[in-house]
Image (cartoon, rainbow, N blue to C red):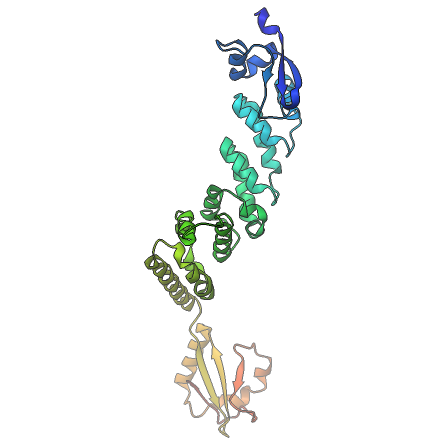
Length: 330
């Protein structure tokens, strides 16, 4: 055991050296225990190649104190150190930090890609919520153009995006162009293959016809075949028709009533309220349509009545209610 209390050194890049005590480090990390005392234990200073002096210093600080200075500049390096040396407590601290701080448009996708490598679920969930709420800005960012294909795939399949599918598809096409080699034979085939697993995630049925005709059709080569493009357009047309039919079910049917005064001047009113339509139909059944004796006596009282529909005159001439008006549905 006494041998485990010896001091040891770590050589970071540029030959900067950090010292620590083996008896502090090995209980916190199985990897460090093997490095220090295993069959292939390292003799002399241990080289640290992948991380800077400051990052590894913060890592050692955490092993000593259970805490360290985590910032957006060093957090992913600390996550990597926690992963490599199997220090789950440090990964948890970094996950907690990122959950609170990884909400900036300029770095959110890079953070997400790193989180996915290290399976930091809480921070990943927070990041994707942020992407969902700020989709439009993220799609327009330079970072989106430099994102990995796997990240583009994950965004395309999200259900909580606040951007329209038109905006999503257009941004993905720009990303596709940006990430294709300049000098490549049959570029369209390359672009098509690059989006082969992403195209099925796009909901073309919700796009407006102008965008479909002016943009999507021009990108028809991205679809597996032109039959698939035709299917997407047909689905969009079918959905639009279904939505129209649903709206017609919701909007009450309108009936137009025509009133003709004794001089032949006409006025119209379009009535949607089914209760009022029924009431007028009942009145017309009990009163001869050619003689509405109540109109004249009601003329003054109606000035304060609630308006049930705007009245449209058929001509610029004056229309006047009198005891000879004729009322009918047309």
